[in-house]
Length: 115
Length: 107
Image 1 (cartoon, chains in turn orange, cyan):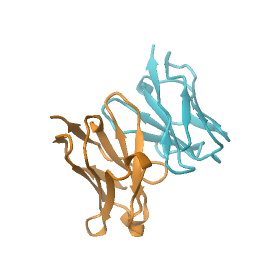
Image 2 (spheres, chains in turn red, blue):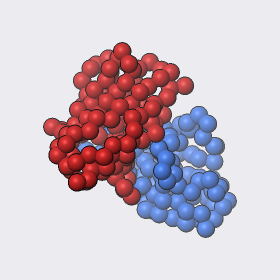
Image 3 (cartoon, helix red, strand yellow):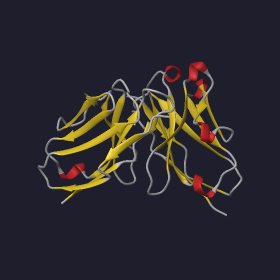
């Protein structure tokens, strides 16, 4: 049974960066696509991008390009999503999830951007 | 990008009712549509994948159907635990996209 456990909540200032971790266990880390999905307060789900660890390079939705970096560390079976130049509207819960139909999901990481 | 439009945006139904949620895609998707249930404060949960395959452990009252651009999630007999928001998602063509969600309330 694959499990995804994410790092804890963050409070960041506008213009700074945040890096969220997603530790996987119980599966073949390198072969599955790991996606990042975010949800702003009271809003719907937004897919941000993904990485297939054995291929190495992550890709992101165009509107995040230049601001988001998705990486993976095979040695620790952990994926990362780093978002830079944070804005107030980046306040959201960030989820990692597995596969093309997303299952399972991490528990979510609340990132609050506040001055 | 493929746009997904769900209808209705919200609905209220009684326990035991049959509930249908529709997801319409902006282009044909070869059945690569998936459905999720999300309860407040929780991560989404996969219900149906590739239009009609029931995810392991999901009650059989949930079913999916459709093809081309029009897809449906059906709850055959609504239960109190089904109060949630439901999302469709396409995995046919990148970037993956979600519908805007349908909130289901119990009368």
